[in-house]
Amino acid sequence: MDILNNISLLPYNTMGINVVARSFASFNDADELSQLMEVRGASVPTLILGGGSNILFTKDYDGWVLKNEVKGIQVVAEDDHYVYVKAGAGENWHSFVEYCLHRNLAGVENLSLIPGNVGASPMQNIGAYGVEIKDVFQELEAFHLRDKKIQVFSLNDCDFGYRESVFKRRYRDQFVILSVTYRLHKTPQFNTSYGAIEQELERMQVQQPTIQAISQAVINIRRSKLPDPKEIGNTGSFFKNPSVPAAFFQGLQGKFPGIVGYTNADGTVKLAAGWLIEQCGWKGVRRGDAGCHARQALVLVNYGHATGKEIYDLSEDILQSVKTKFGVELEREVNIV
Image (tube, rainbow, N blue to C red):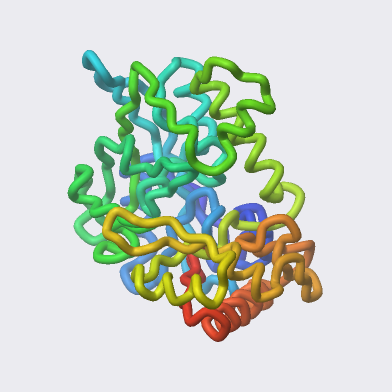
């Protein structure tokens, strides 16, 4: 159990922000995490870090940063329709998707190339191209930091919402996710109607869809729209797509005929945050090394040496301009530290 002091977190966040943690250590299982919590002491601030793809550091962290390195992927059960696969929270998400694709297990192909680790997938109910984690979720194991006990959470226990779960609200900072078990289909149920998947499959000359082909189509689309964090610091989508009442949306349509909206199951309308931001003139804007990406206005980027505060201030100005122009309050998807 190595505890390091005054460690740069630059290698541990995809936005590429260079801040320092007072103490840093990693854990591979619940026992190591429990030991670290005892050594740390009860009053010291603690941050559990996964893949670092959904976090913006705005200052040095005066506490302990504990890196989740719980690994392992295994099939734990099977029935006539599903295979249940358990993955450690420290596993790379896309590597897990590839594990499923290689075994013809369907359900996560639309979630290909999403950055981050397995542990974050239920934390924020990650989703893309018409699929969310809740659609394939079976259960998870989480370590309670105060009681030092492992608790199992079912689908209902997690109370999933749009990029939300109990771990971001009621149980925020109380649990550490150790593993997640997913329910994968033996027989694929293709979901190609969302976004540009059908057009990309046609461009790829795919006549009979497979989960592998859909995965590749999603990868192609994401790479054409989103910057690679290895080349330009970013956290993917920085803002959530907001939902508004149907009557409010109709009012917006009268003022802005080109506005993009999708009706939710509850009758509200989900707006495209990227469209709103672009209409406010932010797409491609750069302030020093902080910027709004040229191809996707939802993505804020670090072109080299931007500070977290500079990225945050840019996001604040974007929020204010969207509220002023459209009367819509955007919400950051990224965790601010």
